[in-house]
Image 1 (spheres, chains in turn green, yellow):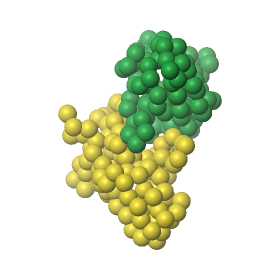
Image 2 (cartoon, each protein chain N blue to C red):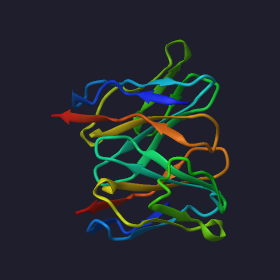
Image 3 (tube, rainbow over the protein chains, first blue to last red):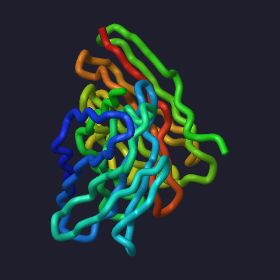
Image 4 (cartoon, each protein chain N blue to C red):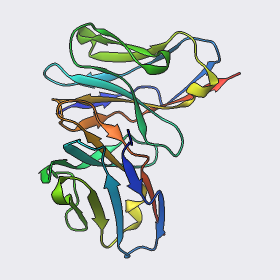
Length: 113
Length: 112
């Protein structure tokens, strides 16, 4: 069965600083990987996804993530954080297309000015 | 294109009362999911539909939860009777075949 670990419950960064959110997954085959963002009182919005091919994927809002099979990781990065990026971020793994997604517990991002 | 629509957005009920949530997926999306998100946690799948067929309901507490997706479009999730531990956000999501899931804004249920 799949599982996802997001080691950081909270992260605080200064506006304009770079960001990296960690995600480690467990799955026996090639996973399908996702990052979602959730603002307070809102549903989840897809930031980016990895299915196959280039291991560095670009998403919306200037985010990118890199799939590293050897480390079972799919870390999310952004070179310069904006105050509007403050939200909760969830990493998720899926076994196959259309199958259920297994989510991590989330990382709350705080941005200080 | 309209997104996934859920109603109500908020619901407060007393324990032992019934409650129902409604979801209208994105047009043309065959797969529909119901997830539950407890405070401080990631969403967990309750049930997944492919068209009108429930293909994964292993995590649905069947003694009190039920769901239906008539005609393979809208879906309703019901809890009867509700317990205090059912307080959570209930998220509906949909996806076309073989791709990512799109989520609604969720229904926040508070059981008092």
